[in-house]
Image 1 (cartoon, rainbow, N blue to C red):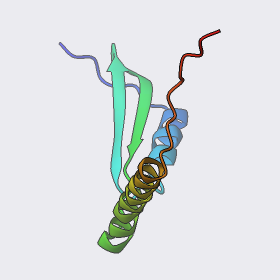
Image 2: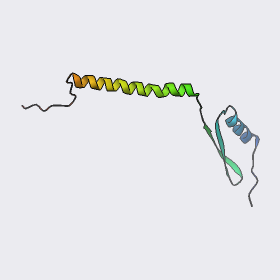
Image 3: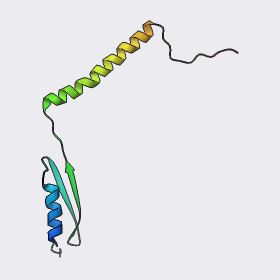
Image 4: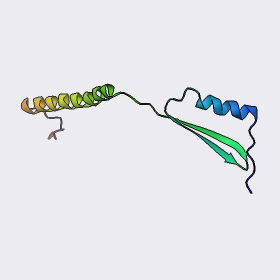
Length: 87
């Protein structure tokens, strides 16, 4: 038969501290032989759609800049490869 869980004031305070201030997420309490041995807190951060769109636009802008630089190098005859020198 399962042992009753032993929770003293210290563990109650620890659990309370992990739950306080948690807006999105979970608190996992691990029990062995009827005693709390571990507390895991997983916190999620949620952002509004407008900030997500701004973050998604930045990598696209960087990719466009890289394409322009590559085209400029090709047009100017820039070659980054090493050439063998006969000596």
